[in-house]
Image (cartoon, rainbow, N blue to C red; front, side, top):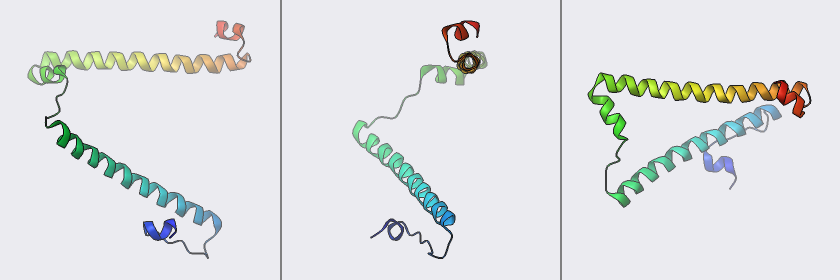
Length: 112
């Protein structure tokens, strides 16, 4: 059996080649999505059977639920770390693009 008869997707021979390729890509994507969802459900079920305990979240989340001051502190920390990470990654991207102008030599990196 071929892939299309297993997945339930049929491609007509009269379609142009581009359409057949798009139909193949779509059916592979749908099948991958179904497999990912099924694997997630299976691992959740098996995890509950093996460990027999409820999942515990970080203590900071429980504290943030209780007071608005803790919630604001947690939001501020998360926002700060996200901004720092974004700036560092974008700075690396820009420095690499600037160094590309100078053929990525040591002088180009120094100037960037």
